[in-house]
Amino acid sequence: MNSCLYECTVMHRRLAPKKHEFVYRIFLFLFDLDELPEIERRVPFFSVNTPNLYSLRDEDYFQFHSRGIRQNLETFLATQNLPVRPARIQLLTLPQLFGYTFNPVSVFFCFDENERPLTSVIQVGNTFGELKPYLVPCDPAGTGFHVRVPKNYYVSPFSELDLEFDFRFDAPGHRLRLAIDDYRGGERVLISTVTGAREELTATNLARFSIRYPLITLKVIVLIHWEALRLWMKKIPFRFKEAEPHLQQGAHRVH
Image 1: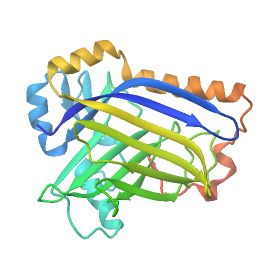
Image 2: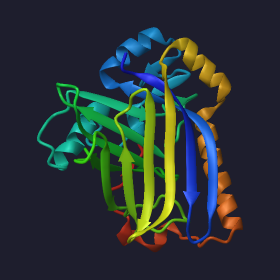
Image 3: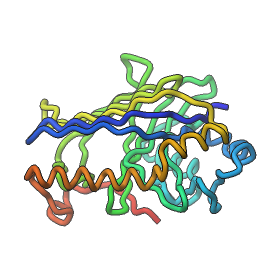
């Protein structure tokens, strides 16, 4: 199958106004959306839109008319004037575990009928129940995806809203590489990377990762709040979400 697991290292390095860094280990799923019925057959503790140990649910992704993950993504691509319908879509994410998940980022990789990268969309989530999709086109200079776009989204109280996101990543293969940097003009103020190694998506491997990284979805949200506390203790400037509504555009509410 094209679907797989990635055992990952997450690195986050803040450069300004004060230095702050952390590194954590997690695992992620890469789903080929056409293979979801086959995954349900092969992995008894995984399902789609029904309760299970792991459950991939439409409601956890940005929605246009609530017609399912593929249809919502294709509708978004149409709003971005993408003329070609993807032949294959892969989704890098964490599904729900015991009915809960939080994804700081999920990535949709789109391919044409010849298996060539077509475009990608990264969904950024915040702890206020909002999701924002960003189109990340193919990099003309390489085989990956790259774009720098205005952020205009409240991700963290310790991060300005008028920065730019710089998204750079490759199509998933034996290795996974994502880079998300924050820029203030020409100054890079935040570096984030996710790197990982591919493992087959089998019941055995998923059980092994579940033991190695227990309660992974809860771990993600707990670590986000722990690092926020560390930033607050360093007296990094704090911004309330209500302060700059004009800089918050294009977000979707989680249903």
